[in-house]
Amino acid sequence: MSAFATAATRIFADPNMAVDATWLPGGVRPGSTIRAIRKSSDELTSYGGARVWSETVRIDVMAAETPSIQSGDRIVIGGETFEVQGEPIRDRERLIVTLDLRPI
Figure 1 (tube, rainbow, N blue to C red):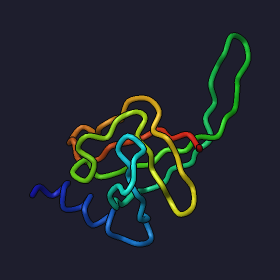
Figure 2 (cartoon, rainbow, N blue to C red; figure 1 turned 90 degrees about the vertical axis):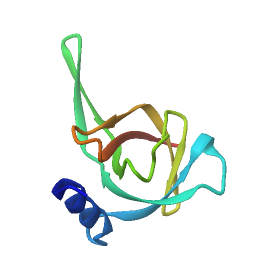
Figure 3 (cartoon, one colour; figure 1 turned 120 degrees about the vertical axis):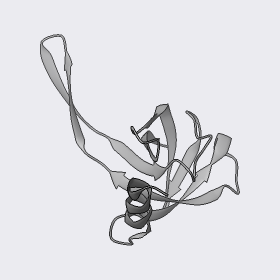
Figure 4 (cartoon, helix red, strand yellow; figure 1 turned 180 degrees about the horizontal axis):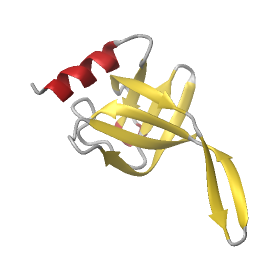
């Protein structure tokens, strides 16, 4: 295991950094438990001459835990259910996947 993989595994295991979530491939239960780092940043988008502010919900997950995750899958965090929208984005090392989510 590389130093990057070891570091990522430790970060996702840390209860201060990541939370338990459930990945539902195709939105079907029972799914599998994964660890997720939630990133809910604001986003500014230019549209014509206007700038539009919107809230986003993104999470990082370990690629090894979600090898076939795709748009349309669902993620449950606590009591909230989200749908994966768009394509999952993998980091350079192919260790972490960033998912753009929308609440259901």
